[in-house]
Image 1: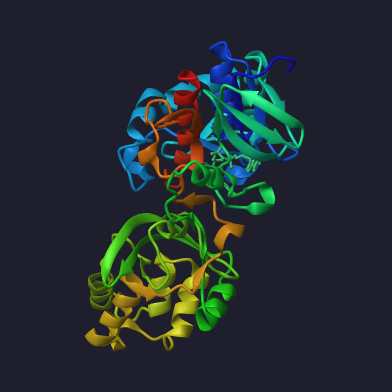
Image 2: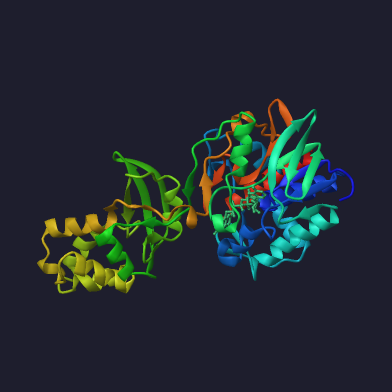
Length: 398
Ligand code: FDA
């Protein structure tokens, strides 16, 4: 770019690229800077390499924030169908893997290709391997000192994402910029992240690594439930993962218990008592194996004291089994942390930012979009929908 850019977007991720192409089409000269050597690395690694790029049912109720109404305006103005229209226009095939959750049929590369092509068409310049060392206000504009020299511009959009997966270029840079300009940053913690377990449960989970089952899970703090999901759970070598566990991790805090129902929708005591009445010679293990993965059913029998025919089980025993099945309580040691978390809970406090333009109140030449803000989605395509919606809202207002 030979001319001074009207807008510098810091971060060539989902939100930054979307904002850049929107502002580019609106006639702005846009320069995107990223310190990584590739644009959109999280897009490429997301959804197992196929990117769950939106959720048709995405709405404000799918987001966590200290300021829950902030996300409403942008999500209303740029909806999942708008992004689907863009994807279809580029002929990218997609599939609905779970209700509402849209993934690329082949590879996330196709989706990143859409964004880079659109940026190109909109005249956006993207400079990779460029770090920003300093930002300061310059009258009505901003001045950046970067590894590629000084850049003066009309506006800076901070789209540097959250802290998860530091090896992919994540940094706390956006939070530092916010603090520099006297904005508050709410407490950040890893979310959509697997749980780790302590010694005995860790060993047991490791034995079952790879086994998955449908569960209902809640987090309990002082006995009070937080979050409630019915989705699969996966045993791993370190602990528990799978969509159900990732979802509940956004509600969980150290010290909280998990209450896991291994037979969601089946009142285990009543079901066991009926089986004892109707098929008294049936082994407990065979009853369990019909309802749970075989390896888990076997492990439960080993952990809790052997098999036997249902007729020989007292009501007290059935009731203990029902509790293990419908209300298995365990306290995770922690989570796998930033290394594997999909997102960051918390971030730049949105109370100092316009929900229409994403400009900082009293400093319109500075804007924040995407995951760097204190807006975090549930699992299932909501986080990308936020990146698109906040990027478009900001890009249109530049
Ligand atoms: P994003 O992190 O995408 O981009 C930030 C950019 O800023 C990066 O390119 C980074 O290099 C750059 N940057 C950071 N610091 C910088 C600095 N100091 N200077 C210059 N550049 C800097 N969501 C979803 O909806 N569906 C899914 O399937 C998944 N799957 C998934 C899997 C995994 C493994 C992860 C880690 C995450 C997901 N997510 C997801 C979450 C989703 O990837 C995330 O919410 C969005 O990428 C956030 O978009 P942003 O543009 O805000 O940040």
